[in-house]
Amino acid sequence: MILTTTRRQALTALGLVTVFIICLQLLAHVAPSSSRRTWANLDEIEVDEDPTRIYRTSKVFSESFEHALDDIPPHQDPLPSSPNSNRINSSKNSKPWIFFVTPTYKRKDQLVDMTRLSQTLSHDKRIYWIVVEDREMPSMRIRWILERSGLPFAHITTLTPEGVHARGVEQRNSALQIIERRKLNGIVYFGDDDNAYDIRMFRELRKTTGVAVFGVGFAVGHYERCVVDEETGKVARFATNWVGGRMYAIDMAGFATHSSLIIEKQPRFRNDWGVGQLETRFIGQLVGNLTDLQPLMENCTRIYVWHVKTQGGRQDEVKNDKEWKRLSSLV
Image 1 (cartoon, rainbow, N blue to C red):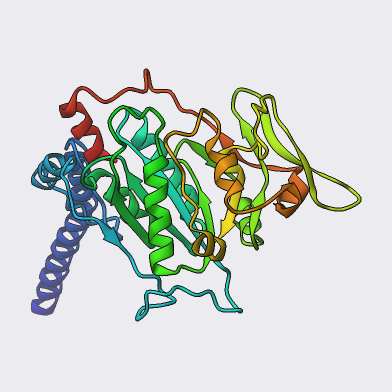
Image 2: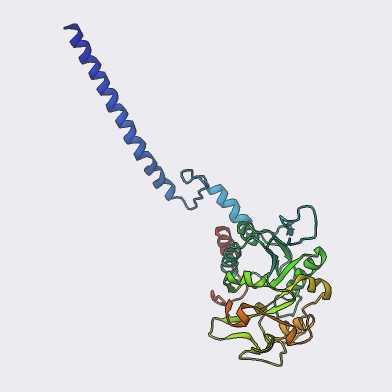
């Protein structure tokens, strides 16, 4: 009789403990969803590599918002292949570096273009991105994009002189000075931020030995490209809607140069060259005639780069710095 009572008491206690454990398990499943609903109501949420740990706060967002338009010092990364030297060489067993030169300036679609470009370039880890802003000091908003790309980069500035309407001249020249001063070894390509690039283009660029040319498509429906003589395999002419007296009638996105030629010839762009003359006069400092050019992209029969010309309204200077700051902090 005593044993039976004891056993009943034990079973009752065990049952209560079991019910208590089940209740705790149910609460454990409910609590996280309630927590997620609470976090989802915040303005800014950032999740690190552990998706269960949400840690962004309004203070962090406030600080990034305030610093989005800050001026910061210029920066130049070394390359992983030459940690102790200013000379960047490509070994015979590795892909040549591409020095991707991008002039940029503050405008309504700058963040759109730079974000898209960074996502494209990040597919190739042997690109050194040289970004030159048209302002007095580098901006925090562009530095954030460069750092997130995961690529080695140089971030510098050069102002366009007063009264000059053509953009990119002084900025490209500043990038050329970096290449010459550091004696960088690889392929130099002028890649504007308002273009779209097929990642197959990078493989083709690495074939450049002197000055290489290839086709460029335009979103409006036409293109510029070189035409190759089938017998000689040399460039014979350019197919374009507008020749304009240009010997080398190709767009800025339609040629690349080996850095050794840049270092030897030290070519420069000039602000006093007429409309559409930048490319042909620059190339003219490097080669003597059409047959000196190296056709790429399957003898200029494929288009791997496009002019997009994004339009977010009029492409003028941003007038509302408060809204620009807020947008910059969210990118």
